[in-house]
Amino acid sequence: MTKISQCNKCQIGKGVHCDYYFPFDDSDCTHFKLEEDKVQEKHFSVSKYSCYLLVVVCYLIVSCIGEWSFSFAYVALFTGGVELFYYLAKKIFKSYPYMEIRKVTISTLKKIGCQPEIDKETGNMSFKYQGEEFFVVVEAETIITFYDTWWGTLDLDDPLLDNLKEAINQTNMNAMPVTLYSISENENKLGVHSRYQLIFTKDTLNKEELFNTILNSFFEVHQEVKGRFSALNDIQDKKEEKERIRIKGFSNQER
Image (cartoon, rainbow, N blue to C red; front, top):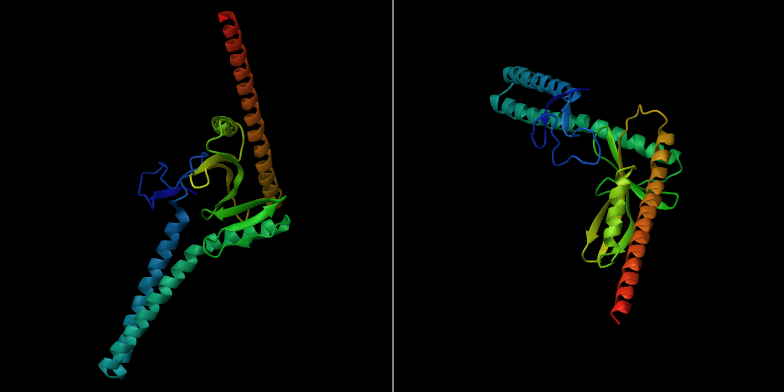
């Protein structure tokens, strides 16, 4: 489907990513309105005007058979009901694709042996896969994101902290999921996290195989980061060893 209007949140031009866009892949901004949204809005607009026309007709009929005060009260009550029905119908109609993708996501997770739990406050789904705790978020009608948070930590005053950051950067050049880190000043920790965002609909083929492949890739990224981190540490150790030998030899010559 082609995009037909500006972003409905930040109102920036077509093709430009807004603040809500995750800069880890090449997908377009998910907050653009799609063509089907315009069709839905047009449908509701027509329905609303039809309801108002019905209100006028009812007023004319009732006014002919009763006192004007009762007629006015009746029309006011009816109009309020129409407005409420229109509002609720619009909200339900717009939220249907979102709820549908949530339902398909939960169903697929159960088919691969996971038991997703729903957070009542955030609506996020958490589950365990091969002993690791993940959670998945429905970002938009056709986009979901898997997260594996705090799978690794390192003290902020650890001398190898820069090596871990470099290992993460190197891994992101060659592998998916994307790995990133955050800093907790209260706990004096750097936390390592990974995320994988994909387009997912009820028509996606081989859903169970797709989920298994994606979730397994998280463990592959874990090993990639750890391997690069160890390699950088070894290089640093050898460099420091050479520096110690050079300094020691220089000291001996001085004596």
